[in-house]
Image 1 (cartoon, helix red, strand yellow):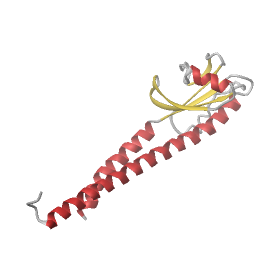
Image 2 (cartoon, rainbow, N blue to C red; image 1 turned 120 degrees about the vertical axis):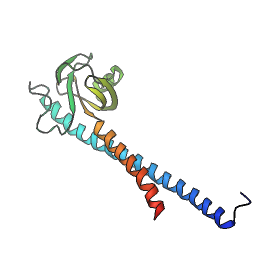
Image 3 (cartoon, one colour; image 1 turned 180 degrees about the vertical axis):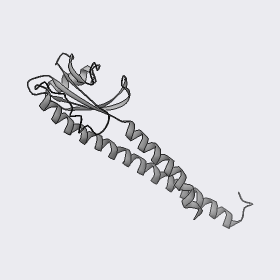
Length: 165
């Protein structure tokens, strides 16, 4: 490196520092957008949990098909972990047993799970149901994954373009 002229060394040092700054900023944006998308899913789950809890003892569908706004699951579960009713029908228990015990004790529990049917990664919210039991609603994280994948691609493409200018 001693044989390189000072201008070349300064240019290389500047390029390395700029690449690190751009990578850091891209990582920051990626993480912030991912967290904002999870926050949006959590807000939708809270609204759907309130609605499903109201429908739980009425015999209606747990979810309003007109307002689901995406791939959504719901189930009414006994305190022992038996699925009484679900939308769509015949869902397996969406929440782990240890989380179920916390909900029966009166807490709201959020988490993420991977399912084989319906396939994919899901975010769930479990809340106590009026009259006993637990209402669990879940939303697919596939739209979040797709959005983050597009953002990642844009960050990879935009970073070299910004250095060209």
